[in-house]
Amino acid sequence: MHLSAQKIAAMEGVRRVHTLNPAAIRMDKSLGDEVGLKNIGIHLITIAPGDKSTEFHTHKYEEEAIYVLSGHGIEIIGETKQRIGPGDFIGFPAGGAAHETVNDGMEPLVCLVIGQRLAQDVVDYPRKRKRLYRNGGQRDMVDYANI
Image (cartoon, rainbow, N blue to C red; front, top):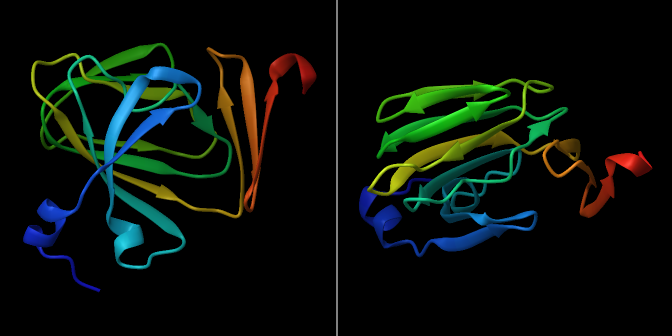
């Protein structure tokens, strides 16, 4: 299925706030859902100045990638902070270091985010000391102390 630039521009973004981090706010246009993709998520996201894309996390089984379209920010990968801007590409192999995207600029940070959609995954949130087990539609969040 084809999505024209005009149709993408006219799509209403969905405001998403991460359940573990109220500062992780993004506007999301799910391009993959719009064209019926089931096994890969493709999202056009906009992060306002001062906001983050998500809570600092890592996937045990799914891979993710980000392509920066406009704006500037910081990509935190493990203990490393990297400046990002238009044209930059960041890949997150499954089981890699935890990461998050922060808009520390003065304009919106717009990115194309791509990720697998496996039936099962395990997501760690090391700063919150929590782990999410995802199995189909079931999601179970546990404290590290209870693993």
